[in-house]
Image (cartoon, rainbow, N blue to C red):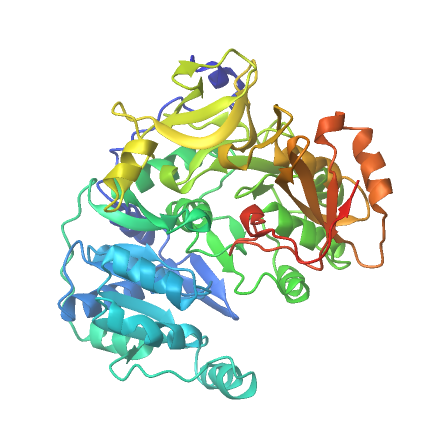
Length: 557
């Protein structure tokens, strides 16, 4: 496809980036630590680490890993929420030449066992709250080195003692576990401080991350993301936002987990290069505490998903915050509903722009222009990114939906130890088949219609769940909703909607269908409804359609 979108780029945005301007993420990190040494880098639990602190602590942790005998290419799992220990361990591991395996702290034993075995991880850094899960599966894995950390480990004494006592003894958030050879995080730092740190030789094609994806449809696969992939994507996002970001001046609110690839790149890496301050939110589901933390900051940017923004906007204290420094809210991970974007602008006075990405692309492929965002689209392909809209092996006609295919320096090398899956996802000439159905508008703006696998076929007609969810979500009584297809004798499939109502609100199925009938053709109107108190979500708040199964008799039309 011709790169027609370049004409709609924010002023001064380059068409290309130089993905080879750095040898590795470590080069980017060390340059930033020199350039912004005394600037604040990370804040959590009332403690701020400067870039000088981060360089020192990550060097100590990297030296500890080397002292353990770990060598370049070994895999290390990080299993922590948003705490200061995460960036210390992350950059320490990368500086030691290791490959990071980001691991969801909420994994069940089955999920954790699979990821550790599949990746061949030989080391892990884990918050002690989840160590009991590791203890159950450790004998089945190749884990040889375990570092446990407590929530307050990087807070000063005596606050550290108080926080850890509260978590362990008062809130009882640390179940008993048996890992007798585990080393406490602070002890590992002390050992590293006494050890020699020998910088590892790291090249662009060395693997920075095994980022696992696809677990909702079967066993998760590890996307191989090289240092060049990650450097390319942070430079692409940085170039697209170049007129927006002031190096050393930004305050980025970070509620999504750093172990998730969206936040890893767009927050942790992009703003590391730009010398920004990341305010880490450890538990964004506690909206009241989240809003309380936001009161302390004249923040400039925030990233999140639709459900998170919806939750903030529903909190009575959010509208009273100081938005005078806010430049941008960025949304990804799931479709941004237009009503949420409109309400965000009404409350904050600033745009909430949607982007698009996937783990296999490190992850960002496209982003809306902050100068003129177009609601309902995911924006424009990033610099050095090619796209194609394909119907089978042929290019779809302009304005027609087809599978989105992507090529660029951010596209993964393949799936770890899964050559068959790699062959399905990557063409021989480097195109990534995303599995997402998209439409390219005349000026290059992309609209993601839906996931190919989530498509509903009603009497031969295609129904895209995103569209149904967007329409249902416009009703003022609806807090959130999810849409799936269910078997139907007459039409093959029928549309079913799962609805969570706003507190104190009610609605009948007939009224909701009438709301839809004014906006949708008849075959798209939901024929089944089930009310829920909550909907199943991923760790970043994306609604899991495949986990939506009937829990009670559904209302049917």
